[in-house]
Amino acid sequence: MASSHIQEQLKELETPAVLLDATQLASNLSSMQKRADRHGVALRPHVKTHKSLEIGRRQLDLGATGITVATLDEAIVFIEGGFASITIARPMVSATKWDRLFSALESHEADVRIVADSEEGMRIAADRATAYDKEVGIFIKIDVGLHRCGLSPEDKRLLDLAIIAQEATHLDFRGILSHAGHAYAAGSSDEAANLAEQERSLMLVVRDTLLANDVPVPEVSVGATPTVLASTHFEGITEIRPGNYVFLDLLPVRAGVAQQSDIALSILGTVISKNNDYFITDTGSKTLTSDTGVHGMTGTQGFGLAYPLDHYQAADYALIVEKVSEEHGLIRRTGFDLPIGSQVRIIPVHACPVANLAREYVVLDDDQLVRWPVEAAKGSR
Image (cartoon, rainbow, N blue to C red; front, top):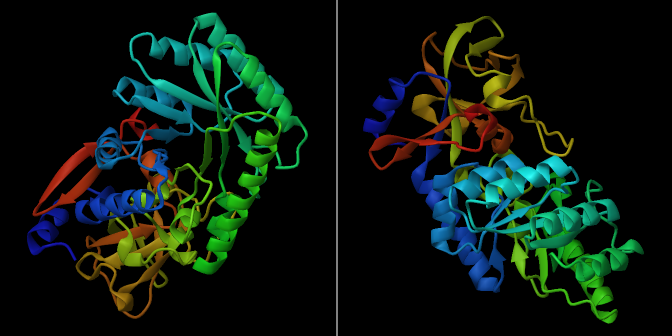
């Protein structure tokens, strides 16, 4: 519970506002770094969750070896922000994007690592790196069950792609990379742990196949907050890339790998109207997003859980954000009333798209509110 002084400051905020609990954020960051250190793996967090230079620097200060991004735009923000080692974890097959990347690297030094899962992707990486006389690290993306990007562990093209990477003069083959995003659909920590072990086993099969064909595999990189939090061992893994752990939200809580009290991000909104069925707030889909899950997986918490400001996370006061339109959130009424003009704090189902729409975080830091920009977010550009 925030201090009474902070509570009074929150009541003066214009809403909607994205709130960060600085104490819980610090705990989440530290806990994940300690987990990586304890298991002897590098932590390269996925910053698409927070898109913040301030949070990224805090992750590096704790011991992260670099960062992971999803898009070129994110990469450029962090390159220009002075981050020295960045993995772009989505295949990049557009020549114009490669040109933009190398333009950013003209004035900023950074070890950029990219992924490919096709000969086309590998060839364009080799071509553009050669044209700019720049070395680029490259991973082969492995599909471990999400069935999005990546080659299956049995795909015969794996060895061919590795050989192309080895032979290209400006590519440095770094190894293999996966994302078990389907673990967000897990119904328990044990189920998430089983998916993590499946991912690990599949990645080691690929590694061993490449090694048996005289292809060195320096890195075996995996990533997804549920699998990392549920795993008990990481033998054979060299790097983890969780992202959501910085904030957490209702998805890892539903998966059984986090508690609701671990969540660091919430949204402050105001009740602007009400009727017999709903409290209507100023937190619609342009704030909460219309995302009720990840990778098409949906849950049962509507668009978030809302609490009166003075009863945040009190179970008896939990309300479901049942509907959203662009600028309105409809919170299902239960056994108590809220006056028009009162405030609610909402825990989103999925924090990452909420952060992407924000321009700033209002940070509850000790007994004061401070503001951090969200430099790489869509809402900030």
